Image (cartoon, rainbow, N blue to C red; front, side, top):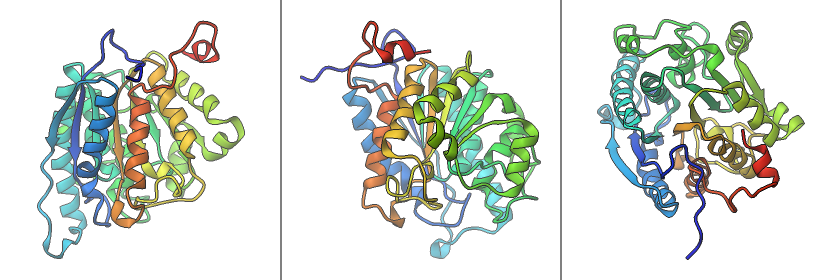
Length: 323
């Protein structure tokens, strides 16, 4: 039998609570709502292969599909997003309060309004590592597309009024995400309003140019150091990866993370001993990939859960590099 080596916060392996977030109305491309169904068996296999207890909490009920499979008008999309993310936040907060590692599978990145808010409710000092080609800090006033999956950071920070304030009034029950509690990794496609917001708010951001210049090991170390003393939530948008690694996604951008760079980042987050929750979003195999995206994303989750080739050894570089 192969040996298993895990890096965990607790002395014994933590239970992984899987929550499906089959939501698509933060953007206009059908198929992303099937992400949880595709990821569930792959992530279960990875977790159980590591000897981690796996608890499937099911899916947050998705809004009813429209005739013809279209997206709802903007106002209806905002109302649906508010209701869905509220239910998701409740589910995440419950599992996190129980001490579980919470794994949310989306769905588009609008679901992070719920996954991050729920994690913050359980752990108010939480830090967020946002891995994405895009900053997702647009507001209704700055967004070129008007798509809600480009606004979750702004909404979580209270940087803008939500598109439907009544639908998002539940956010008052969670602490806002502070600019100093957020670090971006992998940015390479920003709108003008996002550049202005990141600069004005002083948010730490590592672009792909930084990854090229410093290497992912150094970027990961610096990013986690900026969140030192905080439990960490990893919000992983698969379009952070190069399209060769994750072709099945709605907004691919060339020049993203390589397979090894994505693993290195997830390994570093696990090795910090502070990673407590994660969401993986924007998997849409209907747009191509033939299963490549799901398989690669599941392997990244394995690294985030602590999978390593060898345990850190006395005097090894891995041992010396741990926070």
